[in-house]
Every structure is written in C-alpha cells, then in structure tokens.
Image (cartoon, rainbow, N blue to C red; front, side, top):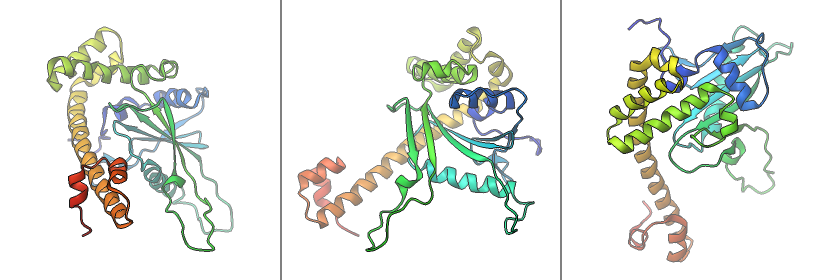
Length: 281
C-alpha cells in the first residue's frame, strides 16, 4: 500500500471526498446555496499511525464555517459528545500557530453538525440531539442547573423514500440512498450479501445512479461495504447486549426503591423470572 495514499474508511466518505460534492451536500442539508467561488477545505481528522479516518467528514467553508457530518446506520445517542470532541481537535489544529494565551482576540470558524442516518430501524425524517440532554442532573442544594455549553446536532434520515425533496437536490446523496436500498432489497432476494452488492452496482450503473463513482471504485466499494455491513451486524448485537445490561441495572435500582415488579417489567421489558433473580453486585 502506498503510505501517502489518503485512506477512506467508508463508501460514504469516499463518495463525498470531492470539495465540489461537499459544497452541494452542505447546500442541500442547510437549504442555502453556496456560490462556486467560496473555497471548500477538507480537514477530516486522520489517525497518523494507522492512516484511517477518525470522523466521517469535516470541512471548512471559506474559513468561516466548519461542518462536521457523520453517517450512521445505527443511531448513537452520544453523538453530541463525540462531535464536541472532534471539534476540539479540529480547533486545536486550526489555532496551533496562533497564541491562544495572547491578549489579542483570535477567531475560529462557526461549527455546524449533521448526522445522516440510513439504518433499518424506524426513525423520523428529522430529529435534534443536544449536548445538554446528556448532562448529569445536579441534586446539590443551592447549585443551579444552568446550560453553559451547548451543541446541537441535526439528524436527518436519508433512507430511500425519506426527505425526498431534499435528497433530490444532491445527486450523490440521492444516489447513495438508492444504492444502499438496492443492496438491502437484493440481499433479501438472494440471501447473499456479496451477490446483492454486485447486483446493486449493476442496477445503479444501468440506471445512471452514481454511475461514474461505482464504475471507478467498484472493487473498493465492494470491499468497504463488506466490512461496513459486517460491522453493523456486530454493533447491533453489541447494542442489544448493552441495552439488556442497562435494563438490568435499572431493574435492580427500582427493586431497591421498592417498586412493584409489574412496574419494573413495564420500564425494562425484562421477564418476571429475570427481575426476581437480579441482585446488586
């Protein structure tokens, strides 16, 4: 492998690795047309040691805006914290040659945050995640619960058939949505993921759906998607197991407070036998 090659971890990141495509993508998501003469500077975080991406997409627009976009097939309720961490690292890179301890004021680009969701679980067309929703509740007398730091994430469902009008304004986003939908359709028909991908690529090329991209990167796309889909399956199992562990913790706490078993069942979905067997470690 060429060590100087910029590695793309996902089909989504590879598809949107061109500044002009990102210009159109942001215009579509924000509903604001960007003039062609405004420069787009990609600054997606890279792991220097392993040469892979840390976040999905981040880029500056004219040095005034910094846009962070994450693509997810499983909704992560902690995205606001992750994006806060990514933003801190990006700002650190931007101001490394400027003295933040100087008496002279510096400026940094204003951030905007998007999560593009195309998983299998039901999800609304749009939703908002707030960093403040993750803050611990303060139960110390005399201390006011003030929100002094906030981060707002726009979550947009890009599955085929959702947000149709918006997706049609960006052919790459529309094409990606249609491509993934075709893979899922053919996987149900064939029961074979690799065969489904090949059929989806053939279908999209024949119907001029991100045709040039798929023709130029067919093998790379196949390899990436095999990894991505297998990772999605692993994460789904991990999420289910984690949810069960969390429900068990909730049930134990409710038992300690003397809550009736019926109420615990309603809140956690655990069986009567499981609840009765739970003990605090």
